[in-house]
Image (cartoon, rainbow, N blue to C red):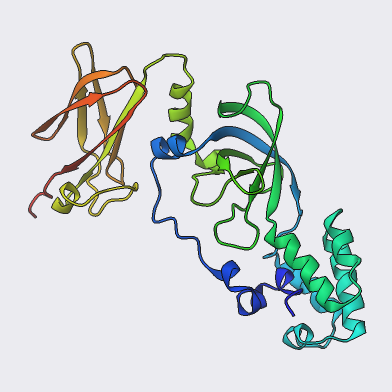
Length: 299
């Protein structure tokens, strides 16, 4: 019997169906350019509601369940098919679920029916209603509310919190518009680079783009394909100069060895780092990435 799983973190992976227990394999963190290009819907919104409004990892739920079965090991409760257990479990779900999910669980007349009802609730995922504050892609400018689905019982879910504001990257899926942990969706307070890029993408200029990249002390960055924003031996605080026929810009590499130039018109540029100079052509509204190897100074 698995009806208890959603509320007992200690038993969660022991008795969950196998597909729920698998971790989310994103491979790495994609660049904001790739996040934007790979999404059909991009917006900033505040979480207004969640359905089901339940956090299956909430330890308070397990504590409440233990109160309903005083003096009993919850492992034993999981294997108990008695009518008394059914009544108590229905009471538990009547407390933690809202309509219409509550009705699906409490209408069960057998433990098997209760298990099936609860499994369905969590397999269907979680529907998040956002109040849109800024639309960038795939959302009408005057749209105020939008619903987005995420997984419920997997590491690929996004743990949305009520009244928090997020930058959301989403695509059409089985239930509608869907997002997940690999999409790049994140809290607004953690989306500084996204906001800079999205600002320029919506600035009204028809061809602004971005040149960005990394500087590493590991020569392999020049031969190994790079798809994510991580490198070995990042070189921080290096002076990076970007020149074109009409302008010159300067940046410094971050602790992660990264540099970024935003709001660039299409055209030809030169990137100069230390004694290296590289020519780059930027297409309209494009993101161009470059990877540099700078040997670490000898000690």
